[in-house]
Image 1: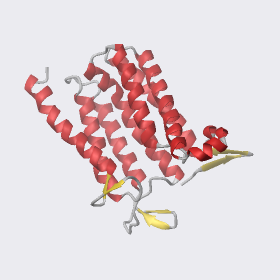
Image 2: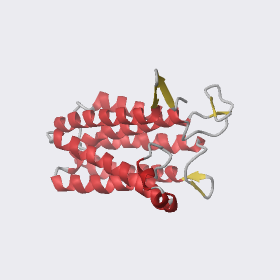
Image 3: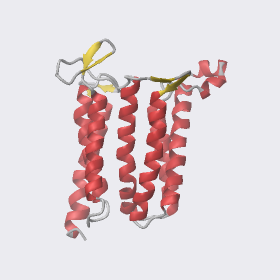
Image 4: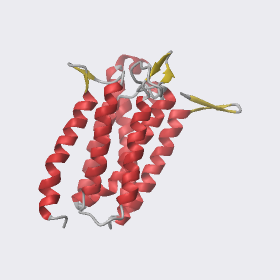
Length: 244
């Protein structure tokens, strides 16, 4: 855990730096992936940038609505760099809505567009996991496994590293297969399945997050739903067309 990086007289907020670097990498790799699919890479980079910015604004406003008396008393708190003062659910919802509308207006083919977004999605998961490791958020349950990390006074499952490892595997799969001949959308579904499976397993060791009845995390339910959808789509769209 390294929430602050001290360089001389300057104290840099490490998770924020990680998120900025990750955002830049997402823009770069998504633009290149779009060009491989004969899409406008520059335009996709702009769409992703606006989507990320909208997600940040939505996350902050979502949090402010839940704690509105504090922000009415101090409106400048909206500009705070505190990463705890964000609502991830509101941010993701805002980003999905804005991004979907902007992509829909481009009239690009669906599956090639998803393929172009694939490396950026995996990089986003990796960036989020590393930022959480630096800040100490998203920690795991107490554990006595050899790879446990000391966090908040206890040895815990390194759930941030589990998520990062899943994202790295997904990126390796994308890197190996992105130039191979395959039906549009297959690479997106493959990477999405890997990320969903990793989330389904890894979140079982998490100590934070939305807990549902039966000791199941909300993220696990979402991951399972994604896997079910992928299993349903895969044979109907791709296998029956004999990979055309």
